[in-house]
Image (cartoon, rainbow, N blue to C red):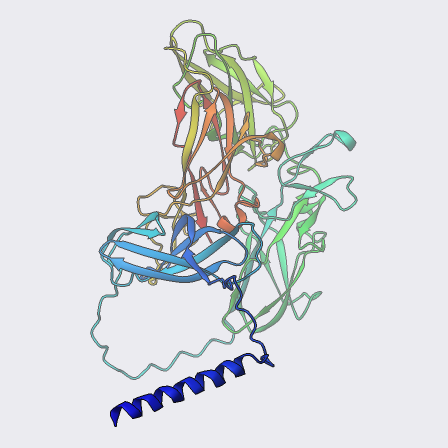
Length: 588
Protein backbone atom coordinates (compact mmCIF):
# COMPACT_ATOMS: atom_id res chain seq x y z
CA UNK A 1 0.00 0.00 0.00
CA UNK A 2 2.83 2.39 0.88
CA UNK A 3 4.58 1.70 -2.46
CA UNK A 4 1.51 2.60 -4.53
CA UNK A 5 0.93 5.85 -2.80
CA UNK A 6 4.55 6.85 -3.41
CA UNK A 7 4.41 6.09 -7.13
CA UNK A 8 1.20 8.08 -7.58
CA UNK A 9 2.73 10.99 -5.81
CA UNK A 10 5.78 10.95 -8.09
CA UNK A 11 3.54 10.81 -11.15
CA UNK A 12 1.60 13.90 -10.01
CA UNK A 13 4.77 15.89 -9.50
CA UNK A 14 5.97 15.09 -13.03
CA UNK A 15 2.70 16.29 -14.56
CA UNK A 16 2.95 19.59 -12.63
CA UNK A 17 6.50 20.20 -13.88
CA UNK A 18 5.37 19.70 -17.48
CA UNK A 19 2.57 22.26 -17.09
CA UNK A 20 4.87 24.80 -15.50
CA UNK A 21 7.45 24.37 -18.24
CA UNK A 22 4.85 25.00 -20.91
CA UNK A 23 3.58 28.13 -19.26
CA UNK A 24 7.07 29.62 -18.85
CA UNK A 25 7.65 29.30 -22.56
CA UNK A 26 5.02 32.01 -23.14
CA UNK A 27 6.24 35.66 -23.24
CA UNK A 28 5.72 37.75 -20.07
CA UNK A 29 3.36 40.65 -20.88
CA UNK A 30 5.17 42.95 -18.30
CA UNK A 31 8.90 42.28 -18.46
CA UNK A 32 10.92 43.13 -15.35
CA UNK A 33 13.55 45.91 -15.86
CA UNK A 34 17.15 44.91 -15.18
CA UNK A 35 18.64 46.01 -11.89
CA UNK A 36 21.05 48.94 -12.35
CA UNK A 37 24.67 47.98 -12.16
CA UNK A 38 25.73 51.30 -10.40
CA UNK A 39 24.90 52.25 -6.81
CA UNK A 40 22.82 55.40 -6.17
CA UNK A 41 25.12 58.01 -4.41
CA UNK A 42 23.56 59.79 -1.47
CA UNK A 43 25.61 62.58 0.27
CA UNK A 44 25.27 62.76 4.01
CA UNK A 45 25.40 66.02 6.05
CA UNK A 46 28.95 66.88 7.17
CA UNK A 47 29.64 67.64 10.83
CA UNK A 48 33.03 68.98 11.85
CA UNK A 49 35.02 71.19 14.18
CA UNK A 50 35.42 74.93 13.54
CA UNK A 51 38.89 76.34 12.85
CA UNK A 52 39.53 79.01 15.54
CA UNK A 53 42.14 81.69 14.88
CA UNK A 54 41.84 83.94 17.95
CA UNK A 55 40.08 84.34 21.27
CA UNK A 56 39.53 87.65 23.08
CA UNK A 57 38.28 87.74 26.67
CA UNK A 58 36.12 90.75 27.56
CA UNK A 59 35.49 91.59 31.23
CA UNK A 60 32.33 93.71 31.45
CA UNK A 61 32.15 96.70 33.76
CA UNK A 62 29.77 95.30 36.35
CA UNK A 63 29.75 93.44 39.63
CA UNK A 64 29.51 90.54 39.90
CA UNK A 65 31.88 90.47 36.92
CA UNK A 66 30.64 89.10 33.60
CA UNK A 67 33.10 87.61 31.12
CA UNK A 68 32.51 87.06 27.42
CA UNK A 69 34.76 85.10 25.08
CA UNK A 70 34.95 86.59 21.59
CA UNK A 71 35.97 83.73 19.28
CA UNK A 72 36.99 84.33 15.67
CA UNK A 73 37.91 81.88 12.96
CA UNK A 74 37.34 80.57 9.45
CA UNK A 75 34.65 78.33 7.94
CA UNK A 76 35.77 76.31 4.88
CA UNK A 77 32.98 77.37 2.51
CA UNK A 78 29.75 79.30 2.16
CA UNK A 79 27.47 76.41 3.22
CA UNK A 80 29.19 75.47 6.46
CA UNK A 81 27.78 77.13 9.58
CA UNK A 82 28.45 77.03 13.30
CA UNK A 83 26.28 74.22 14.65
CA UNK A 84 26.77 74.09 18.40
CA UNK A 85 28.85 75.99 20.99
CA UNK A 86 29.32 74.17 24.27
CA UNK A 87 31.27 75.27 27.32
CA UNK A 88 32.70 73.08 30.08
CA UNK A 89 34.24 74.40 33.29
CA UNK A 90 36.70 72.41 35.36
CA UNK A 91 38.80 74.05 38.08
CA UNK A 92 40.52 77.10 36.59
CA UNK A 93 39.86 76.08 32.97
CA UNK A 94 36.98 76.76 30.59
CA UNK A 95 36.83 74.62 27.45
CA UNK A 96 34.71 75.87 24.54
CA UNK A 97 33.89 73.51 21.68
CA UNK A 98 32.51 74.88 18.43
CA UNK A 99 31.16 72.35 15.92
CA UNK A 100 30.10 72.96 12.31
CA UNK A 101 27.34 71.66 10.06
CA UNK A 102 27.24 71.42 6.27
CA UNK A 103 23.93 70.24 4.66
CA UNK A 104 23.86 67.30 2.23
CA UNK A 105 24.09 67.89 -1.53
CA UNK A 106 24.55 71.66 -1.03
CA UNK A 107 26.05 73.75 -3.82
CA UNK A 108 28.51 76.13 -2.11
CA UNK A 109 31.08 78.78 -2.80
CA UNK A 110 34.57 77.46 -2.16
CA UNK A 111 35.88 80.70 -0.56
CA UNK A 112 36.59 80.62 3.17
CA UNK A 113 34.13 82.54 5.35
CA UNK A 114 35.15 84.23 8.62
CA UNK A 115 33.02 83.88 11.76
CA UNK A 116 32.87 85.92 14.95
CA UNK A 117 31.00 84.53 17.97
CA UNK A 118 30.58 85.95 21.49
CA UNK A 119 30.09 83.31 24.18
CA UNK A 120 29.17 84.16 27.76
CA UNK A 121 31.11 82.34 30.48
CA UNK A 122 29.51 81.33 33.76
CA UNK A 123 31.88 83.07 36.19
CA UNK A 124 29.44 83.86 39.00
CA UNK A 125 30.76 82.45 42.27
CA UNK A 126 34.38 82.01 41.10
CA UNK A 127 37.24 82.75 43.46
CA UNK A 128 39.78 85.47 42.71
CA UNK A 129 42.58 84.22 40.47
CA UNK A 130 43.68 83.53 36.91
CA UNK A 131 41.59 81.38 34.55
CA UNK A 132 42.34 79.85 31.16
CA UNK A 133 39.80 79.70 28.34
CA UNK A 134 40.43 77.38 25.38
CA UNK A 135 38.30 77.38 22.20
CA UNK A 136 39.12 74.51 19.83
CA UNK A 137 42.76 74.60 20.88
CA UNK A 138 43.30 78.41 20.99
CA UNK A 139 43.72 79.76 24.53
CA UNK A 140 43.50 83.02 26.42
CA UNK A 141 43.44 84.03 30.09
CA UNK A 142 41.55 86.42 32.33
CA UNK A 143 42.02 87.34 35.99
CA UNK A 144 39.50 88.08 38.73
CA UNK A 145 40.96 90.49 41.27
CA UNK A 146 38.38 89.62 43.92
CA UNK A 147 35.95 86.78 44.57
CA UNK A 148 33.14 87.08 42.02
CA UNK A 149 30.19 86.58 44.32
CA UNK A 150 27.64 88.75 46.07
CA UNK A 151 27.92 88.68 49.84
CA UNK A 152 24.73 87.48 51.40
CA UNK A 153 23.09 90.16 53.41
CA UNK A 154 20.53 89.71 56.18
CA UNK A 155 16.96 90.19 55.18
CA UNK A 156 16.18 93.86 55.65
CA UNK A 157 13.58 94.85 58.14
CA UNK A 158 10.62 96.13 56.24
CA UNK A 159 9.79 99.63 57.23
CA UNK A 160 7.27 101.99 55.77
CA UNK A 161 8.76 103.87 52.80
CA UNK A 162 9.34 107.50 53.63
CA UNK A 163 7.19 109.98 51.84
CA UNK A 164 9.35 111.46 49.07
CA UNK A 165 10.22 115.09 49.44
CA UNK A 166 8.34 117.17 46.89
CA UNK A 167 10.47 118.64 44.12
CA UNK A 168 10.96 122.35 44.52
CA UNK A 169 9.17 123.77 41.47
CA UNK A 170 11.80 126.53 41.27
CA UNK A 171 14.98 124.42 41.60
CA UNK A 172 16.01 123.94 37.96
CA UNK A 173 19.34 125.32 36.72
CA UNK A 174 21.18 126.04 33.46
CA UNK A 175 24.95 126.46 33.18
CA UNK A 176 27.68 126.52 30.57
CA UNK A 177 30.94 128.14 29.54
CA UNK A 178 31.99 130.98 27.26
CA UNK A 179 35.45 130.22 25.93
CA UNK A 180 38.09 131.45 23.51
CA UNK A 181 37.96 129.08 20.50
CA UNK A 182 41.58 129.23 19.34
CA UNK A 183 42.64 129.72 15.72
CA UNK A 184 45.68 131.65 14.50
CA UNK A 185 46.75 132.18 10.88
CA UNK A 186 50.17 133.30 9.71
CA UNK A 187 50.28 134.88 6.26
CA UNK A 188 47.51 135.53 3.78
CA UNK A 189 46.09 133.97 0.64
CA UNK A 190 47.86 130.88 -0.59
CA UNK A 191 50.66 131.56 1.90
CA UNK A 192 48.32 131.35 4.92
CA UNK A 193 49.33 128.74 7.52
CA UNK A 194 46.61 127.90 10.13
CA UNK A 195 47.32 126.73 13.68
CA UNK A 196 45.76 123.76 15.47
CA UNK A 197 42.01 124.16 15.98
CA UNK A 198 41.41 125.93 12.64
CA UNK A 199 39.06 124.81 9.89
CA UNK A 200 38.41 126.32 6.46
CA UNK A 201 35.46 128.69 6.13
CA UNK A 202 32.53 127.83 3.87
CA UNK A 203 33.96 129.86 0.99
CA UNK A 204 37.32 128.09 1.37
CA UNK A 205 39.19 131.40 1.31
CA UNK A 206 40.06 131.77 4.99
CA UNK A 207 40.07 129.93 8.33
CA UNK A 208 38.08 129.97 11.55
CA UNK A 209 38.13 128.09 14.88
CA UNK A 210 36.49 124.65 14.86
CA UNK A 211 33.76 125.19 17.47
CA UNK A 212 35.12 122.47 19.80
CA UNK A 213 35.98 123.13 23.44
CA UNK A 214 39.45 121.55 23.60
CA UNK A 215 42.18 121.18 26.21
CA UNK A 216 44.18 124.38 26.62
CA UNK A 217 41.42 126.72 25.42
CA UNK A 218 40.61 129.29 28.09
CA UNK A 219 37.31 130.63 29.41
CA UNK A 220 36.42 134.31 28.95
CA UNK A 221 35.77 136.22 32.16
CA UNK A 222 33.27 139.06 32.62
CA UNK A 223 30.93 138.24 29.70
CA UNK A 224 27.25 139.12 30.29
CA UNK A 225 24.92 136.17 29.47
CA UNK A 226 21.18 136.81 29.07
CA UNK A 227 18.19 134.63 30.03
CA UNK A 228 14.80 134.96 28.34
CA UNK A 229 11.53 133.08 28.75
CA UNK A 230 10.35 131.00 25.79
CA UNK A 231 12.03 129.98 22.57
CA UNK A 232 14.81 132.16 21.09
CA UNK A 233 15.01 134.98 20.48
CA UNK A 234 13.99 136.06 23.99
CA UNK A 235 15.69 138.04 26.77
CA UNK A 236 15.07 140.26 29.75
CA UNK A 237 14.35 137.64 32.42
CA UNK A 238 17.79 137.61 34.08
CA UNK A 239 21.53 137.96 33.41
CA UNK A 240 24.67 136.20 34.65
CA UNK A 241 28.37 137.11 34.44
CA UNK A 242 31.06 134.54 33.55
CA UNK A 243 33.68 133.85 36.23
CA UNK A 244 37.46 133.52 35.79
CA UNK A 245 37.02 130.13 34.06
CA UNK A 246 34.33 131.43 31.70
CA UNK A 247 31.48 129.62 33.50
CA UNK A 248 28.01 131.03 34.16
CA UNK A 249 24.92 129.64 35.95
CA UNK A 250 21.21 130.45 36.18
CA UNK A 251 19.51 128.93 39.25
CA UNK A 252 16.09 128.86 40.93
CA UNK A 253 14.33 128.30 37.61
CA UNK A 254 10.84 126.86 37.13
CA UNK A 255 10.29 124.09 34.59
CA UNK A 256 9.89 125.50 31.11
CA UNK A 257 11.57 126.72 27.93
CA UNK A 258 14.29 129.37 28.09
CA UNK A 259 16.55 131.25 25.70
CA UNK A 260 20.24 131.71 26.59
CA UNK A 261 21.91 134.50 24.60
CA UNK A 262 24.96 136.76 24.46
CA UNK A 263 24.99 140.15 22.77
CA UNK A 264 28.58 140.74 21.65
CA UNK A 265 27.83 144.39 20.83
CA UNK A 266 26.43 145.30 24.28
CA UNK A 267 28.55 146.93 26.98
CA UNK A 268 30.82 145.47 28.47
CA UNK A 269 30.84 142.46 26.09
CA UNK A 270 32.03 144.54 23.16
CA UNK A 271 35.25 145.49 24.95
CA UNK A 272 35.90 141.84 25.86
CA UNK A 273 34.93 140.14 22.59
CA UNK A 274 35.32 142.40 19.59
CA UNK A 275 36.54 141.99 16.94
CA UNK A 276 35.67 138.33 16.27
CA UNK A 277 32.73 136.00 15.81
CA UNK A 278 30.87 133.04 17.31
CA UNK A 279 31.81 129.47 16.37
CA UNK A 280 29.30 127.78 18.70
CA UNK A 281 26.32 127.64 18.23
CA UNK A 282 27.01 126.91 14.56
CA UNK A 283 24.45 129.46 13.46
CA UNK A 284 27.02 132.13 14.20
CA UNK A 285 24.62 133.73 16.69
CA UNK A 286 24.84 133.28 20.44
CA UNK A 287 21.28 131.99 20.87
CA UNK A 288 20.36 128.60 22.38
CA UNK A 289 16.88 127.34 23.35
CA UNK A 290 16.85 125.10 26.45
CA UNK A 291 13.95 123.03 27.84
CA UNK A 292 14.28 122.15 31.54
CA UNK A 293 12.14 119.96 33.81
CA UNK A 294 11.37 120.69 37.45
CA UNK A 295 14.52 120.27 39.53
CA UNK A 296 16.68 119.49 36.47
CA UNK A 297 20.19 120.93 35.99
CA UNK A 298 21.07 121.35 32.31
CA UNK A 299 24.78 121.83 31.65
CA UNK A 300 27.01 122.28 28.63
CA UNK A 301 25.16 125.28 27.17
CA UNK A 302 28.42 126.66 25.80
CA UNK A 303 29.44 129.52 23.51
CA UNK A 304 32.69 129.62 21.53
CA UNK A 305 34.27 132.92 20.40
CA UNK A 306 36.99 133.23 17.74
CA UNK A 307 38.95 136.49 17.91
CA UNK A 308 39.76 138.10 14.60
CA UNK A 309 43.22 138.87 15.96
CA UNK A 310 44.87 136.25 18.16
CA UNK A 311 44.59 136.16 21.07
CA UNK A 312 43.22 139.71 21.54
CA UNK A 313 43.53 142.77 19.37
CA UNK A 314 44.75 144.76 22.40
CA UNK A 315 47.31 142.20 23.68
CA UNK A 316 50.33 143.98 25.08
CA UNK A 317 53.51 142.15 24.18
CA UNK A 318 55.27 144.04 26.99
CA UNK A 319 52.97 143.04 29.86
CA UNK A 320 51.77 139.58 28.74
CA UNK A 321 53.56 136.57 30.24
CA UNK A 322 55.83 134.09 28.46
CA UNK A 323 56.15 130.54 29.73
CA UNK A 324 57.04 127.10 28.36
CA UNK A 325 55.21 123.95 29.42
CA UNK A 326 57.28 120.83 28.71
CA UNK A 327 54.98 118.06 27.41
CA UNK A 328 57.26 115.19 26.33
CA UNK A 329 60.42 114.07 24.54
CA UNK A 330 59.31 112.88 21.11
CA UNK A 331 62.73 111.40 20.26
CA UNK A 332 66.04 110.59 21.98
CA UNK A 333 65.15 109.81 25.60
CA UNK A 334 67.64 110.86 28.27
CA UNK A 335 70.92 108.89 28.29
CA UNK A 336 70.47 107.50 24.80
CA UNK A 337 73.78 105.99 23.65
CA UNK A 338 75.33 107.17 20.36
CA UNK A 339 78.52 106.28 18.58
CA UNK A 340 81.10 109.11 18.22
CA UNK A 341 80.09 111.46 15.43
CA UNK A 342 76.59 109.97 14.99
CA UNK A 343 73.95 112.35 13.62
CA UNK A 344 70.52 112.41 15.28
CA UNK A 345 67.41 114.57 15.65
CA UNK A 346 66.07 115.67 19.01
CA UNK A 347 62.35 116.59 19.13
CA UNK A 348 60.29 118.05 21.98
CA UNK A 349 56.59 118.82 22.38
CA UNK A 350 56.08 122.16 24.16
CA UNK A 351 52.94 123.99 25.31
CA UNK A 352 52.43 127.75 25.52
CA UNK A 353 51.49 128.19 29.20
CA UNK A 354 51.77 131.98 29.18
CA UNK A 355 49.41 134.70 27.92
CA UNK A 356 51.56 135.90 25.00
CA UNK A 357 51.08 134.16 21.66
CA UNK A 358 54.31 132.82 20.17
CA UNK A 359 54.20 134.69 16.89
CA UNK A 360 56.60 135.34 14.04
CA UNK A 361 60.09 136.01 15.38
CA UNK A 362 59.92 133.44 18.20
CA UNK A 363 62.59 130.75 18.02
CA UNK A 364 64.40 127.95 19.84
CA UNK A 365 67.69 129.26 21.23
CA UNK A 366 70.76 127.30 22.38
CA UNK A 367 71.62 128.52 25.90
CA UNK A 368 74.56 126.56 27.28
CA UNK A 369 76.15 123.14 27.70
CA UNK A 370 77.14 120.97 24.76
CA UNK A 371 75.88 122.45 21.51
CA UNK A 372 76.50 119.25 19.52
CA UNK A 373 76.38 120.99 16.16
CA UNK A 374 73.01 122.68 16.63
CA UNK A 375 72.35 126.18 15.24
CA UNK A 376 72.29 129.09 17.67
CA UNK A 377 68.62 129.75 16.88
CA UNK A 378 65.87 127.91 15.04
CA UNK A 379 62.50 129.57 14.25
CA UNK A 380 59.31 127.97 15.53
CA UNK A 381 57.40 126.19 12.73
CA UNK A 382 54.07 127.93 13.42
CA UNK A 383 52.20 130.47 15.53
CA UNK A 384 51.34 129.00 18.95
CA UNK A 385 48.46 130.55 20.88
CA UNK A 386 48.24 130.32 24.69
CA UNK A 387 47.28 126.76 25.59
CA UNK A 388 48.38 125.26 22.27
CA UNK A 389 51.30 122.90 21.66
CA UNK A 390 54.11 122.82 19.11
CA UNK A 391 56.61 120.13 18.11
CA UNK A 392 60.12 121.51 17.63
CA UNK A 393 63.17 119.59 16.42
CA UNK A 394 66.89 120.28 16.16
CA UNK A 395 69.51 118.30 14.22
CA UNK A 396 72.53 117.32 16.36
CA UNK A 397 75.82 115.43 16.03
CA UNK A 398 77.29 113.37 18.87
CA UNK A 399 80.80 114.53 19.92
CA UNK A 400 83.80 112.45 18.88
CA UNK A 401 85.02 111.88 22.45
CA UNK A 402 83.48 109.18 24.66
CA UNK A 403 81.51 110.62 27.60
CA UNK A 404 78.26 112.17 28.86
CA UNK A 405 76.91 115.31 27.19
CA UNK A 406 74.12 117.78 28.03
CA UNK A 407 72.82 120.66 25.91
CA UNK A 408 70.22 123.24 27.05
CA UNK A 409 67.72 125.35 25.07
CA UNK A 410 65.07 128.00 25.74
CA UNK A 411 62.69 130.07 23.64
CA UNK A 412 63.26 133.65 22.66
CA UNK A 413 60.91 136.33 21.33
CA UNK A 414 61.46 138.67 18.40
CA UNK A 415 63.57 140.97 20.62
CA UNK A 416 65.85 138.11 21.68
CA UNK A 417 64.48 138.01 25.25
CA UNK A 418 64.67 134.44 26.56
CA UNK A 419 62.15 132.57 28.72
CA UNK A 420 62.12 129.05 30.13
CA UNK A 421 59.97 126.26 31.50
CA UNK A 422 57.30 127.55 33.87
CA UNK A 423 58.32 131.12 33.02
CA UNK A 424 61.57 130.80 34.99
CA UNK A 425 64.64 132.11 33.26
CA UNK A 426 66.85 129.43 34.85
CA UNK A 427 64.72 126.50 33.65
CA UNK A 428 65.54 124.97 30.26
CA UNK A 429 64.62 122.11 27.99
CA UNK A 430 67.57 119.86 27.26
CA UNK A 431 68.95 116.72 25.69
CA UNK A 432 71.29 114.37 27.54
CA UNK A 433 73.19 111.66 25.67
CA UNK A 434 76.01 109.18 26.20
CA UNK A 435 78.77 108.76 23.61
CA UNK A 436 80.35 105.30 23.66
CA UNK A 437 82.45 103.15 21.38
CA UNK A 438 80.22 100.79 19.49
CA UNK A 439 80.45 97.07 20.18
CA UNK A 440 80.36 94.38 17.52
CA UNK A 441 78.61 95.49 14.36
CA UNK A 442 75.08 94.11 14.47
CA UNK A 443 73.65 92.15 11.60
CA UNK A 444 71.89 94.35 9.01
CA UNK A 445 68.15 94.71 9.48
CA UNK A 446 68.21 92.92 12.83
CA UNK A 447 66.48 95.56 14.96
CA UNK A 448 63.02 94.91 16.43
CA UNK A 449 60.18 97.04 17.77
CA UNK A 450 57.43 95.37 19.77
CA UNK A 451 54.96 95.80 22.58
CA UNK A 452 51.50 94.95 23.84
CA UNK A 453 48.06 96.46 23.17
CA UNK A 454 45.82 96.13 26.19
CA UNK A 455 42.40 97.13 27.50
CA UNK A 456 42.84 99.85 30.11
CA UNK A 457 39.92 99.43 32.53
CA UNK A 458 38.07 102.14 34.48
CA UNK A 459 34.41 102.07 35.53
CA UNK A 460 32.11 103.55 38.14
CA UNK A 461 31.12 101.01 40.79
CA UNK A 462 27.66 100.50 42.24
CA UNK A 463 28.48 102.76 45.19
CA UNK A 464 29.39 105.59 42.78
CA UNK A 465 33.12 105.37 43.46
CA UNK A 466 35.62 104.87 40.60
CA UNK A 467 37.16 101.42 40.25
CA UNK A 468 40.88 100.79 40.83
CA UNK A 469 42.87 101.99 37.84
CA UNK A 470 40.90 105.24 37.36
CA UNK A 471 42.26 108.80 37.46
CA UNK A 472 40.23 112.00 37.58
CA UNK A 473 40.59 114.12 34.45
CA UNK A 474 40.63 117.33 36.51
CA UNK A 475 40.47 117.84 40.25
CA UNK A 476 36.86 117.69 41.52
CA UNK A 477 35.54 117.28 37.96
CA UNK A 478 33.86 113.94 38.71
CA UNK A 479 35.04 112.59 35.35
CA UNK A 480 37.41 109.61 35.27
CA UNK A 481 39.50 107.76 32.70
CA UNK A 482 41.77 104.73 32.93
CA UNK A 483 45.23 105.50 34.31
CA UNK A 484 47.36 104.35 31.37
CA UNK A 485 49.09 101.65 33.46
CA UNK A 486 49.33 98.07 32.23
CA UNK A 487 48.01 95.94 35.10
CA UNK A 488 48.21 92.16 35.28
CA UNK A 489 44.44 91.78 35.48
CA UNK A 490 43.70 93.86 32.37
CA UNK A 491 42.93 92.01 29.15
CA UNK A 492 45.13 92.03 26.07
CA UNK A 493 43.64 92.98 22.69
CA UNK A 494 44.25 90.62 19.78
CA UNK A 495 43.93 91.21 16.00
CA UNK A 496 44.80 94.92 16.28
CA UNK A 497 46.69 96.25 13.24
CA UNK A 498 49.87 98.21 14.12
CA UNK A 499 51.64 100.38 11.53
CA UNK A 500 55.28 101.48 11.21
CA UNK A 501 56.39 104.53 9.23
CA UNK A 502 59.81 106.08 8.77
CA UNK A 503 60.68 109.38 10.47
CA UNK A 504 59.06 111.29 13.33
CA UNK A 505 55.33 111.01 14.00
CA UNK A 506 53.40 113.82 12.28
CA UNK A 507 52.35 116.62 14.60
CA UNK A 508 48.71 116.46 13.50
CA UNK A 509 48.57 112.76 14.40
CA UNK A 510 47.54 111.66 10.89
CA UNK A 511 49.93 109.06 9.48
CA UNK A 512 49.50 108.90 5.67
CA UNK A 513 48.96 105.39 4.35
CA UNK A 514 51.67 106.04 1.76
CA UNK A 515 54.30 106.44 4.50
CA UNK A 516 53.62 103.06 6.15
CA UNK A 517 56.56 100.70 5.55
CA UNK A 518 55.49 97.72 7.66
CA UNK A 519 52.51 96.39 9.63
CA UNK A 520 51.96 93.80 12.34
CA UNK A 521 48.91 92.30 14.05
CA UNK A 522 48.64 91.57 17.76
CA UNK A 523 48.39 87.92 18.75
CA UNK A 524 46.08 86.32 21.33
CA UNK A 525 48.20 87.81 24.13
CA UNK A 526 48.05 91.31 22.61
CA UNK A 527 51.73 91.25 21.61
CA UNK A 528 53.02 92.51 18.27
CA UNK A 529 56.52 92.52 16.74
CA UNK A 530 57.96 94.54 13.86
CA UNK A 531 61.15 92.75 12.80
CA UNK A 532 63.87 93.08 10.18
CA UNK A 533 64.43 96.80 10.84
CA UNK A 534 67.49 98.94 10.34
CA UNK A 535 68.51 101.63 12.83
CA UNK A 536 66.74 104.97 12.50
CA UNK A 537 63.80 107.11 13.57
CA UNK A 538 60.37 105.47 13.31
CA UNK A 539 56.76 106.21 14.16
CA UNK A 540 54.68 103.33 15.58
CA UNK A 541 50.95 104.06 15.27
CA UNK A 542 47.51 102.45 15.51
CA UNK A 543 44.62 103.93 13.52
CA UNK A 544 41.52 103.01 15.54
CA UNK A 545 39.24 104.01 12.65
CA UNK A 546 40.95 101.92 9.96
CA UNK A 547 38.98 99.11 8.35
CA UNK A 548 41.11 96.58 10.25
CA UNK A 549 40.55 98.15 13.69
CA UNK A 550 37.25 100.01 13.77
CA UNK A 551 35.13 96.99 14.73
CA UNK A 552 37.67 95.97 17.40
CA UNK A 553 38.21 99.32 19.11
CA UNK A 554 35.40 101.79 18.52
CA UNK A 555 33.85 103.24 20.65
CA UNK A 556 36.73 104.14 22.95
CA UNK A 557 40.00 106.09 23.10
CA UNK A 558 43.70 105.76 23.90
CA UNK A 559 44.99 106.21 27.44
CA UNK A 560 48.63 105.36 26.68
CA UNK A 561 51.06 106.71 25.38
CA UNK A 562 48.75 109.67 26.19
CA UNK A 563 45.00 110.31 26.29
CA UNK A 564 43.77 110.39 22.72
CA UNK A 565 47.22 109.55 21.28
CA UNK A 566 47.77 106.27 19.41
CA UNK A 567 51.30 106.88 18.14
CA UNK A 568 54.86 106.95 19.52
CA UNK A 569 58.19 108.00 18.02
CA UNK A 570 61.10 105.55 18.43
CA UNK A 571 64.80 106.18 17.79
CA UNK A 572 66.12 102.67 17.04
CA UNK A 573 69.78 101.71 17.02
CA UNK A 574 71.08 99.10 14.59
CA UNK A 575 70.43 95.65 16.06
CA UNK A 576 68.48 97.09 19.01
CA UNK A 577 65.31 95.51 20.38
CA UNK A 578 62.76 97.89 21.94
CA UNK A 579 59.89 95.72 23.16
CA UNK A 580 57.95 98.07 25.45
CA UNK A 581 56.20 100.23 22.85
CA UNK A 582 52.78 99.62 24.40
CA UNK A 583 49.31 101.06 23.70
CA UNK A 584 46.45 101.25 26.23
CA UNK A 585 42.81 101.45 25.02
CA UNK A 586 39.73 102.22 27.12
CA UNK A 587 36.34 101.17 25.78
CA UNK A 588 33.48 103.63 26.26
